[in-house]
Image 1: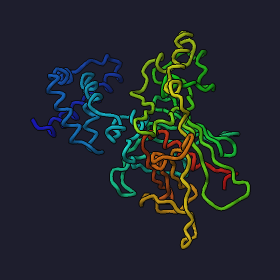
Image 2: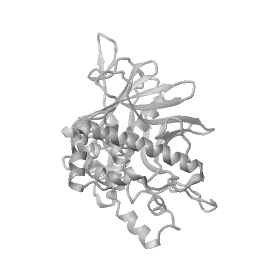
Image 3: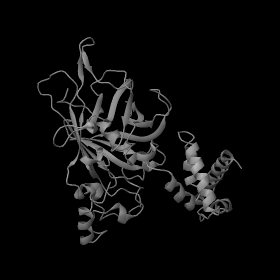
Image 4: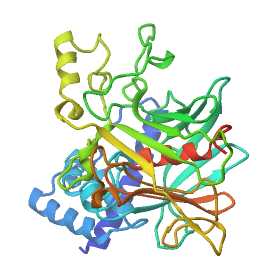
Length: 392
Protein backbone atom coordinates (compact mmCIF):
# COMPACT_ATOMS: atom_id res chain seq x y z
CA UNK A 1 0.00 0.00 0.00
CA UNK A 2 1.37 3.43 -0.96
CA UNK A 3 1.61 6.35 1.47
CA UNK A 4 -1.07 8.21 -0.51
CA UNK A 5 -3.49 5.26 -0.27
CA UNK A 6 -2.79 4.92 3.44
CA UNK A 7 -3.59 8.60 4.00
CA UNK A 8 -6.90 8.24 2.16
CA UNK A 9 -7.80 5.20 4.29
CA UNK A 10 -6.93 7.10 7.47
CA UNK A 11 -9.06 10.08 6.45
CA UNK A 12 -11.98 7.80 5.55
CA UNK A 13 -11.74 5.95 8.87
CA UNK A 14 -11.53 9.22 10.78
CA UNK A 15 -14.58 10.68 9.00
CA UNK A 16 -16.52 7.48 9.77
CA UNK A 17 -15.47 7.76 13.41
CA UNK A 18 -16.72 11.37 13.60
CA UNK A 19 -20.11 10.34 12.19
CA UNK A 20 -20.35 7.37 14.59
CA UNK A 21 -19.47 9.45 17.64
CA UNK A 22 -21.94 12.19 16.66
CA UNK A 23 -24.76 9.69 16.12
CA UNK A 24 -24.00 7.88 19.38
CA UNK A 25 -23.99 11.09 21.41
CA UNK A 26 -27.29 12.22 19.88
CA UNK A 27 -28.83 8.86 20.79
CA UNK A 28 -27.37 9.00 24.29
CA UNK A 29 -25.31 5.86 23.73
CA UNK A 30 -21.80 5.09 24.97
CA UNK A 31 -18.99 5.82 22.55
CA UNK A 32 -16.81 2.76 22.06
CA UNK A 33 -13.66 2.06 20.09
CA UNK A 34 -14.62 0.89 16.54
CA UNK A 35 -13.01 -2.18 15.01
CA UNK A 36 -11.12 -0.28 12.30
CA UNK A 37 -9.62 2.05 14.95
CA UNK A 38 -8.37 -0.96 16.91
CA UNK A 39 -6.74 -2.36 13.75
CA UNK A 40 -4.81 0.88 13.21
CA UNK A 41 -3.76 0.92 16.88
CA UNK A 42 -2.25 -2.57 16.58
CA UNK A 43 0.20 -1.58 13.85
CA UNK A 44 3.82 -2.37 14.89
CA UNK A 45 5.56 0.68 16.35
CA UNK A 46 8.57 0.46 14.00
CA UNK A 47 6.35 0.38 10.93
CA UNK A 48 4.07 3.09 12.32
CA UNK A 49 7.01 5.40 12.99
CA UNK A 50 8.36 4.93 9.46
CA UNK A 51 4.92 5.66 7.97
CA UNK A 52 4.40 8.78 10.07
CA UNK A 53 7.90 10.10 9.32
CA UNK A 54 7.24 9.74 5.59
CA UNK A 55 3.85 11.42 5.84
CA UNK A 56 5.30 14.29 7.89
CA UNK A 57 8.09 14.81 5.36
CA UNK A 58 5.90 14.56 2.25
CA UNK A 59 3.05 16.79 3.47
CA UNK A 60 5.16 19.83 4.29
CA UNK A 61 2.67 22.62 3.53
CA UNK A 62 -1.04 23.32 3.86
CA UNK A 63 -3.55 22.15 2.73
CA UNK A 64 -1.86 18.71 2.25
CA UNK A 65 -0.50 18.98 5.81
CA UNK A 66 -3.97 18.19 7.15
CA UNK A 67 -2.96 14.55 6.54
CA UNK A 68 -0.54 14.85 9.48
CA UNK A 69 -3.37 16.12 11.66
CA UNK A 70 -5.55 13.23 10.47
CA UNK A 71 -2.88 10.76 11.60
CA UNK A 72 -2.87 12.31 15.08
CA UNK A 73 -6.62 11.76 15.27
CA UNK A 74 -6.59 8.01 14.59
CA UNK A 75 -6.02 6.80 18.14
CA UNK A 76 -3.95 7.56 21.24
CA UNK A 77 -0.82 5.67 20.15
CA UNK A 78 -0.83 7.40 16.77
CA UNK A 79 -1.39 10.77 18.42
CA UNK A 80 1.50 10.36 20.87
CA UNK A 81 3.90 9.24 18.16
CA UNK A 82 2.79 11.99 15.75
CA UNK A 83 3.36 14.64 18.44
CA UNK A 84 6.83 13.19 19.01
CA UNK A 85 7.72 13.30 15.30
CA UNK A 86 6.24 16.72 14.47
CA UNK A 87 8.59 19.38 15.80
CA UNK A 88 7.62 22.79 17.17
CA UNK A 89 7.62 25.79 14.77
CA UNK A 90 10.94 26.92 16.27
CA UNK A 91 12.68 23.91 14.70
CA UNK A 92 10.42 22.96 11.77
CA UNK A 93 9.08 26.33 10.65
CA UNK A 94 5.64 24.67 10.29
CA UNK A 95 2.37 25.35 12.07
CA UNK A 96 0.58 22.00 12.33
CA UNK A 97 -1.55 21.66 15.46
CA UNK A 98 -3.63 24.36 17.21
CA UNK A 99 -1.00 24.67 19.97
CA UNK A 100 1.44 25.91 17.29
CA UNK A 101 -0.11 29.40 17.51
CA UNK A 102 1.05 29.59 21.15
CA UNK A 103 4.63 28.47 20.39
CA UNK A 104 7.52 30.70 19.24
CA UNK A 105 8.12 30.94 15.50
CA UNK A 106 11.27 29.76 13.67
CA UNK A 107 14.62 31.37 14.44
CA UNK A 108 15.95 31.70 10.89
CA UNK A 109 12.95 32.86 8.89
CA UNK A 110 9.73 34.83 9.16
CA UNK A 111 6.36 33.07 9.22
CA UNK A 112 4.27 34.81 6.54
CA UNK A 113 0.69 35.52 7.61
CA UNK A 114 -2.04 38.00 6.76
CA UNK A 115 -4.97 39.57 8.58
CA UNK A 116 -8.43 40.21 7.13
CA UNK A 117 -10.60 42.86 8.76
CA UNK A 118 -14.41 42.84 8.74
CA UNK A 119 -15.46 46.41 9.52
CA UNK A 120 -19.18 45.64 9.93
CA UNK A 121 -18.67 43.00 12.63
CA UNK A 122 -15.44 44.43 14.11
CA UNK A 123 -13.81 41.05 13.61
CA UNK A 124 -10.24 40.22 12.57
CA UNK A 125 -9.05 36.93 11.07
CA UNK A 126 -5.45 35.67 11.00
CA UNK A 127 -4.40 33.33 8.19
CA UNK A 128 -1.17 31.51 7.44
CA UNK A 129 0.07 32.41 3.96
CA UNK A 130 0.29 29.40 1.66
CA UNK A 131 2.38 31.07 -1.05
CA UNK A 132 4.72 34.04 -1.39
CA UNK A 133 1.90 36.06 -2.97
CA UNK A 134 0.40 38.86 -0.88
CA UNK A 135 -3.08 37.39 -1.25
CA UNK A 136 -4.07 33.72 -1.29
CA UNK A 137 -6.68 31.54 0.36
CA UNK A 138 -4.56 31.01 3.45
CA UNK A 139 -4.92 28.59 6.36
CA UNK A 140 -7.11 29.97 9.17
CA UNK A 141 -5.27 30.35 12.47
CA UNK A 142 -7.04 32.77 14.83
CA UNK A 143 -9.96 35.18 15.05
CA UNK A 144 -10.51 38.24 17.25
CA UNK A 145 -13.63 40.26 18.04
CA UNK A 146 -13.65 43.84 19.31
CA UNK A 147 -15.77 44.71 22.35
CA UNK A 148 -15.98 48.36 23.43
CA UNK A 149 -16.35 49.09 27.13
CA UNK A 150 -16.96 52.44 28.86
CA UNK A 151 -13.31 52.74 29.92
CA UNK A 152 -11.46 50.29 27.68
CA UNK A 153 -11.61 48.05 24.61
CA UNK A 154 -11.23 44.28 24.56
CA UNK A 155 -10.14 42.10 21.64
CA UNK A 156 -11.09 38.48 22.43
CA UNK A 157 -8.91 35.97 20.54
CA UNK A 158 -10.18 32.50 19.65
CA UNK A 159 -9.13 29.38 17.78
CA UNK A 160 -12.54 29.27 16.03
CA UNK A 161 -13.79 31.83 13.53
CA UNK A 162 -17.38 31.74 14.83
CA UNK A 163 -16.83 31.03 18.53
CA UNK A 164 -15.21 33.93 20.35
CA UNK A 165 -16.74 33.65 23.81
CA UNK A 166 -14.39 33.90 26.79
CA UNK A 167 -16.14 30.90 28.35
CA UNK A 168 -15.48 28.72 25.32
CA UNK A 169 -12.84 26.02 24.97
CA UNK A 170 -11.64 27.89 21.87
CA UNK A 171 -10.73 31.02 23.88
CA UNK A 172 -6.97 31.50 24.19
CA UNK A 173 -6.54 35.10 25.31
CA UNK A 174 -7.40 38.76 24.84
CA UNK A 175 -5.97 42.24 24.30
CA UNK A 176 -7.19 45.12 26.48
CA UNK A 177 -6.57 48.84 25.92
CA UNK A 178 -6.90 51.86 28.15
CA UNK A 179 -9.36 54.67 27.40
CA UNK A 180 -6.93 56.66 25.22
CA UNK A 181 -5.78 53.62 23.28
CA UNK A 182 -2.15 54.27 24.22
CA UNK A 183 -1.54 51.33 26.55
CA UNK A 184 -2.46 47.69 25.96
CA UNK A 185 -2.09 44.46 27.91
CA UNK A 186 -1.99 41.00 26.32
CA UNK A 187 -3.64 38.34 28.48
CA UNK A 188 -3.12 34.64 27.91
CA UNK A 189 -5.93 32.28 28.89
CA UNK A 190 -3.33 29.82 30.19
CA UNK A 191 0.04 30.45 31.83
CA UNK A 192 3.02 30.35 29.50
CA UNK A 193 5.12 29.00 32.39
CA UNK A 194 4.62 28.13 36.03
CA UNK A 195 5.67 31.56 37.25
CA UNK A 196 2.86 33.48 35.55
CA UNK A 197 0.53 35.32 37.94
CA UNK A 198 -3.20 35.45 37.31
CA UNK A 199 -4.89 38.83 36.91
CA UNK A 200 -7.90 39.44 39.12
CA UNK A 201 -11.20 39.74 37.25
CA UNK A 202 -14.75 38.47 37.39
CA UNK A 203 -13.79 35.53 35.17
CA UNK A 204 -11.29 34.30 37.79
CA UNK A 205 -13.74 34.19 40.71
CA UNK A 206 -14.54 30.52 40.47
CA UNK A 207 -15.59 29.85 44.05
CA UNK A 208 -19.31 30.24 43.36
CA UNK A 209 -19.29 28.25 40.11
CA UNK A 210 -21.11 24.94 40.31
CA UNK A 211 -19.10 23.33 37.54
CA UNK A 212 -15.65 23.93 36.08
CA UNK A 213 -15.12 22.53 32.60
CA UNK A 214 -11.66 21.12 31.76
CA UNK A 215 -10.85 23.78 29.16
CA UNK A 216 -12.56 26.83 30.68
CA UNK A 217 -9.76 29.40 31.06
CA UNK A 218 -8.60 29.96 34.60
CA UNK A 219 -8.41 33.67 34.01
CA UNK A 220 -6.17 36.18 32.35
CA UNK A 221 -2.40 35.93 32.67
CA UNK A 222 -0.68 39.17 31.59
CA UNK A 223 2.15 38.23 29.24
CA UNK A 224 2.95 41.53 27.47
CA UNK A 225 2.50 45.30 27.71
CA UNK A 226 2.25 47.58 24.67
CA UNK A 227 2.68 51.33 24.92
CA UNK A 228 2.36 53.99 22.23
CA UNK A 229 4.20 57.26 22.67
CA UNK A 230 1.98 60.30 23.08
CA UNK A 231 2.08 62.88 20.29
CA UNK A 232 0.99 65.98 22.17
CA UNK A 233 2.73 68.36 19.73
CA UNK A 234 0.97 66.91 16.70
CA UNK A 235 4.23 66.30 14.82
CA UNK A 236 4.17 64.34 11.59
CA UNK A 237 5.59 60.85 11.43
CA UNK A 238 4.81 57.22 12.24
CA UNK A 239 3.61 56.04 15.61
CA UNK A 240 6.23 55.10 18.17
CA UNK A 241 5.57 51.98 20.20
CA UNK A 242 7.26 49.71 22.71
CA UNK A 243 6.31 46.14 23.65
CA UNK A 244 7.43 44.65 26.95
CA UNK A 245 7.18 40.86 26.70
CA UNK A 246 6.80 39.95 30.38
CA UNK A 247 6.98 36.18 29.77
CA UNK A 248 10.07 36.20 27.50
CA UNK A 249 13.63 36.86 28.78
CA UNK A 250 15.75 39.36 26.86
CA UNK A 251 18.42 36.69 26.36
CA UNK A 252 16.05 34.75 24.07
CA UNK A 253 17.18 36.77 21.03
CA UNK A 254 20.83 35.91 21.63
CA UNK A 255 22.46 32.76 20.20
CA UNK A 256 21.38 29.84 22.36
CA UNK A 257 18.71 31.91 24.13
CA UNK A 258 15.47 30.18 25.09
CA UNK A 259 11.88 31.41 25.26
CA UNK A 260 9.04 29.62 27.11
CA UNK A 261 7.22 27.11 24.87
CA UNK A 262 3.82 25.59 25.63
CA UNK A 263 3.83 21.91 24.68
CA UNK A 264 0.05 21.48 24.77
CA UNK A 265 -3.17 22.99 26.07
CA UNK A 266 -3.92 22.18 29.71
CA UNK A 267 -6.47 19.42 30.22
CA UNK A 268 -7.01 19.39 33.96
CA UNK A 269 -7.75 21.94 36.62
CA UNK A 270 -4.48 21.48 38.50
CA UNK A 271 -2.53 22.42 35.37
CA UNK A 272 -4.98 25.12 34.33
CA UNK A 273 -5.24 26.88 37.70
CA UNK A 274 -1.71 26.85 39.14
CA UNK A 275 -2.09 30.29 40.74
CA UNK A 276 -5.33 29.61 42.63
CA UNK A 277 -4.98 28.56 46.31
CA UNK A 278 -7.59 25.80 46.29
CA UNK A 279 -5.76 23.79 43.60
CA UNK A 280 -2.26 23.72 45.13
CA UNK A 281 -0.69 23.93 48.53
CA UNK A 282 1.08 27.05 49.73
CA UNK A 283 4.54 25.49 49.47
CA UNK A 284 3.88 24.33 45.89
CA UNK A 285 2.63 27.77 44.90
CA UNK A 286 5.73 29.50 46.17
CA UNK A 287 7.99 26.91 44.55
CA UNK A 288 6.12 27.22 41.24
CA UNK A 289 6.37 30.99 41.24
CA UNK A 290 10.09 30.91 41.90
CA UNK A 291 10.71 28.20 39.31
CA UNK A 292 9.57 30.26 36.31
CA UNK A 293 12.19 30.95 33.64
CA UNK A 294 12.35 34.65 34.48
CA UNK A 295 13.10 33.83 38.11
CA UNK A 296 16.16 31.91 36.96
CA UNK A 297 17.33 34.67 34.63
CA UNK A 298 19.48 37.49 35.90
CA UNK A 299 18.62 39.59 32.87
CA UNK A 300 15.31 41.36 32.33
CA UNK A 301 12.42 40.75 30.01
CA UNK A 302 12.44 41.21 26.24
CA UNK A 303 11.54 44.70 25.04
CA UNK A 304 10.56 45.30 21.41
CA UNK A 305 10.62 48.74 19.80
CA UNK A 306 9.57 49.86 16.37
CA UNK A 307 12.35 50.27 13.86
CA UNK A 308 12.88 53.90 12.96
CA UNK A 309 11.89 54.72 9.37
CA UNK A 310 13.82 57.03 7.08
CA UNK A 311 12.47 60.09 5.33
CA UNK A 312 12.27 59.68 1.54
CA UNK A 313 12.87 63.05 -0.14
CA UNK A 314 11.41 62.12 -3.52
CA UNK A 315 8.31 60.45 -2.13
CA UNK A 316 8.01 62.94 0.74
CA UNK A 317 7.07 60.26 3.25
CA UNK A 318 8.50 58.00 5.94
CA UNK A 319 9.72 54.67 4.53
CA UNK A 320 10.59 51.21 5.83
CA UNK A 321 11.89 48.30 3.77
CA UNK A 322 9.24 45.59 4.00
CA UNK A 323 10.83 43.62 1.13
CA UNK A 324 7.65 43.75 -0.95
CA UNK A 325 5.32 42.58 1.83
CA UNK A 326 3.61 45.97 2.24
CA UNK A 327 2.20 48.03 -0.63
CA UNK A 328 0.03 50.75 0.97
CA UNK A 329 1.35 53.61 3.11
CA UNK A 330 -0.34 53.68 6.51
CA UNK A 331 0.32 54.97 10.01
CA UNK A 332 -0.43 51.41 11.17
CA UNK A 333 2.63 49.92 9.40
CA UNK A 334 5.52 48.97 11.68
CA UNK A 335 8.54 46.73 12.17
CA UNK A 336 9.65 45.58 15.62
CA UNK A 337 13.19 44.72 16.70
CA UNK A 338 14.67 43.80 20.07
CA UNK A 339 15.79 46.74 22.15
CA UNK A 340 19.23 46.31 23.77
CA UNK A 341 18.85 46.12 27.54
CA UNK A 342 22.22 47.63 28.35
CA UNK A 343 25.17 48.59 26.21
CA UNK A 344 25.50 48.78 22.43
CA UNK A 345 23.16 46.96 20.06
CA UNK A 346 24.37 43.73 18.48
CA UNK A 347 23.37 41.94 15.25
CA UNK A 348 20.51 40.23 17.08
CA UNK A 349 18.96 43.65 17.73
CA UNK A 350 18.75 44.44 14.01
CA UNK A 351 16.78 41.33 13.13
CA UNK A 352 13.09 42.03 12.50
CA UNK A 353 10.96 39.99 14.92
CA UNK A 354 7.55 41.25 13.77
CA UNK A 355 6.41 43.33 10.82
CA UNK A 356 2.90 44.46 9.99
CA UNK A 357 1.61 46.48 7.07
CA UNK A 358 -1.27 47.30 4.78
CA UNK A 359 -1.77 45.77 1.33
CA UNK A 360 -5.47 46.52 0.77
CA UNK A 361 -8.49 48.29 2.22
CA UNK A 362 -9.05 45.57 4.82
CA UNK A 363 -6.06 43.33 4.19
CA UNK A 364 -2.77 43.41 6.09
CA UNK A 365 0.36 41.25 6.19
CA UNK A 366 1.85 39.99 9.45
CA UNK A 367 5.24 38.26 9.55
CA UNK A 368 6.84 37.06 12.79
CA UNK A 369 9.69 34.92 14.09
CA UNK A 370 11.27 33.60 17.29
CA UNK A 371 10.91 34.32 20.20
CA UNK A 372 7.26 35.43 19.89
CA UNK A 373 4.27 33.27 18.92
CA UNK A 374 1.49 33.80 16.38
CA UNK A 375 -0.91 34.66 19.22
CA UNK A 376 1.44 37.29 20.66
CA UNK A 377 2.19 38.74 17.20
CA UNK A 378 -1.52 38.86 16.32
CA UNK A 379 -2.33 40.63 19.60
CA UNK A 380 0.37 43.24 19.02
CA UNK A 381 -0.98 43.89 15.53
CA UNK A 382 -4.52 44.23 16.88
CA UNK A 383 -3.31 47.14 19.01
CA UNK A 384 -2.46 49.01 15.81
CA UNK A 385 -6.11 48.86 14.69
CA UNK A 386 -7.42 50.54 17.83
CA UNK A 387 -8.21 54.27 17.76
CA UNK A 388 -5.46 56.35 19.38
CA UNK A 389 -6.76 59.76 20.39
CA UNK A 390 -3.44 61.12 21.62
CA UNK A 391 -1.03 59.45 19.19
CA UNK A 392 -2.11 60.79 15.77
